[in-house]
Length: 543
Image (cartoon, rainbow, N blue to C red; front, side, top):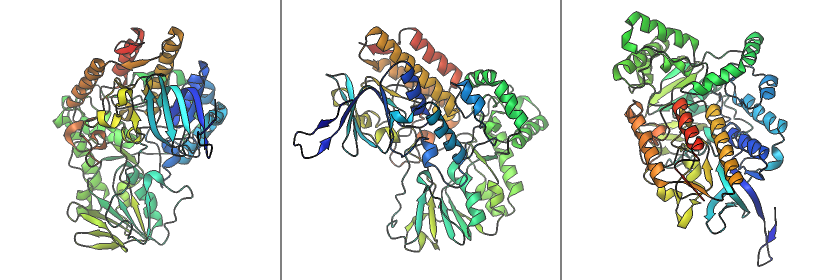
């Protein structure tokens, strides 16, 4: 590591040199650091936040909770870690997950290799030196022979762009950047814009505290009861005793979740009674495994309709007001948007202090000093919450102004949608890797399962590079093109293109509509990655 003065001598300009620079200290960045240190590389992690945890550091909104079961939303690389850590509930809350992240950072002595409060503003490849130069917002420079982007898929917050936001005289918050000291809603009139995953979790909690809560909905979302509960000590012990088997099952499962048991039958191959009973069983079980009940729910319109109609019937059974129930009942296919898992979401609309508004009938024009102005009304609020999601999968990467060989700008290359080889690397950007990037299962899977697979693949690739004395690796454009065509082909054979979701970037104005994750499932994806590595990194140019 070196620290250099600028030529003028008037200010200090610090420059740091490493084998690998990792951007992000969430679960991906921490595990990448751990594994690269094991193979003897000098690694630095750059992190914008003041602590570890990634999305679980930032997303502290009321009710924030994981929708993958706690015992599986955890690292598998250390059996000691698995055995010593105890989760309290079936689905963990944000504070508990953040506590776990901090425990991991301390247990494996990771903090000394992480530079916090460091936002990366530019990333540029120096072809002559075969190294990456990263500059922070404070002017520091970091050089690395390799660069690994562990920036997360849901980390670039979709900031509100409503007219008149500066005129509003109340308090306003974004769910993805929630104040660390919380927000007091007692006695307050609150408005929340959006009904995606964050809002589905936050609305029931806020409604219990606020004087009145008004929900502005554009598109109704499907949500399944999470059926969260405290974990019994005997079931925790049982899982810990079977962890090796469970982790193996997770790697062989389409979504990377061992507890998600896929139905083997097609929906229409069984009687209506049997089908209803299976949906009811999964509804009672809770969690997002509902759409795995039958093998063709994600590919066949008729099968999908049966699952969607079951949920719509449940909404109408639960919500007392028929007009509100109809508004809350989605009309699109189930699973084309992210399926939510909730605690009393639909029940919350039976409260006298909760109002649901349809912005399709009365669109939001913007904010005024009193609150939210629609075409027909002005709604007065003490607090407005924006639950409008993320610039998923690509936003964080594009925000860093990544420049590859010959001045190639990633923003330009991705103007018609992201291109990558296996979601791991991009042509024209040597020695740059992305963990759970576009073109990989990522957000369609248990992120922990996918993170570990990517980290281990990158670790082995860098070991191969170091052992062979190689200095540069990047995908061949032809391999990248073939892979993205395959990603598109797989997605086209599903129903996931049938609605405007953040999977296709539809929540970001001007973003090219393209299905970004790999919909083929983890097992075939892992097999392809392993084949590429075993063949001496087929599809890559290595020099």
